[in-house]
Image 1 (tube, rainbow, N blue to C red):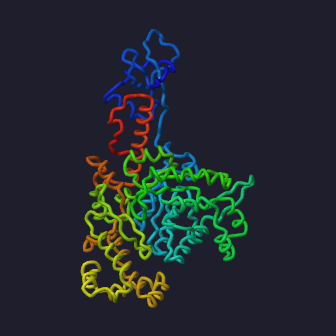
Image 2 (cartoon, rainbow, N blue to C red; image 1 turned 135 degrees about the vertical axis):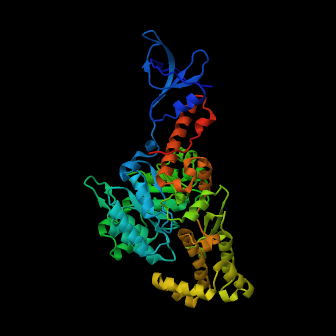
Image 3 (spheres, rainbow, N blue to C red; image 1 turned 90 degrees about the horizontal axis):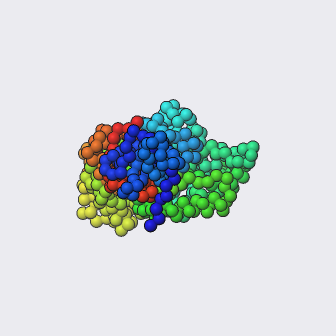
Length: 539
């Protein structure tokens, strides 16, 4: 086996070096100071030392010295990702707080993230246009352009007009950053947002007013975001007067998104892919697409999904992630829009307490999302609704006994009263849905079933205790891993979990574990406890 060779000598410190035990762990975890790897000539063991003097000879004023094998520079959590991320967006850390839907990623959460040196996205998906606009107005008032923040734009194939309205409002209100999620193909709305305001600088460089963070879990979807906008969409936007001739021409020279978030097994919409398999594929594709289209700037590829412990975050950065994005673990933060009852339920979840269930926004397509299973019956009930939708062409075709159980056990009211509420909702939000339902009995049934799927999230947000068994809480295994990690610490309690403390502890721990891995590669005998970081109050 190859051995390190001495590069000099260390000595002249009042502090003794450490070769094992608690003292070695203590020195290794002081990541903000350079650490010297030294060798004991008698035993050949490698140890650690701080401060002192580095020399080329073995004696210094008669003081004994030890062979110096390596010096590792200081390491900060701020340095774990791609420096260009923080430089461009003005964050302290390469860390994104994800846009949890239905306003669970609240204005308060986004503000807290920004003021802690993080980048947060408001969870606009599932909300009315007025709610989203009000949130953007408040974020502009509290953060403006001085601190980093953004909002979510979710692909809405059943409500394209709403998606377009929200995108146009983001442009008008100066929302510089957008998290694009649930896209299977590019829509005019996301292309409009991405291209609006692009200009050419004096040296021929392309300047972007708007930046898209594309959250993807499939290489073929990532490819669309890493390519220039489709000509057919660009031509349509130009014809409609939504982009200028200059923007249409410059569209050929830039991708839709320069920040690609690789989403592995996560809460909510997910393909349940493992990060270790998916990330390298998309990271390699990013290099290929940059070369193919001769982009002037390289992509930043981030990682999301399953990031509930320092080890997971360190592994993501080890894969080459430019930044990390957390989602599930922030739902239990005090700033989240989830009710206290819902947050307490999350705090009791284990890594196997999740399941896949039909999604409200893409119900008819059979799309599923990952939700909390423990303490709620939403998952099995939602699956039952989809089975009925798949097997019958209308509510009238469902057997009377089954329909009675549906009203009693799931809806908690008659189908007729549910339909009345559906009519009231869509008459304001999207009347076209009601027009279609009047002609298509199966679509009418879908809207009624989506009533339950949609409200179940809102019951969890509002803390409607009468519907506790129907709470829909988006959640991935990261939540269970996080709960296991913080057990016995100050962060075990739901009341102690803030978005800032969650992020700071994950990042600090990731940096400590990164240092531990570095030392092991140099041959230091690293005890198992060196790869453990216990949560604490950080600033």
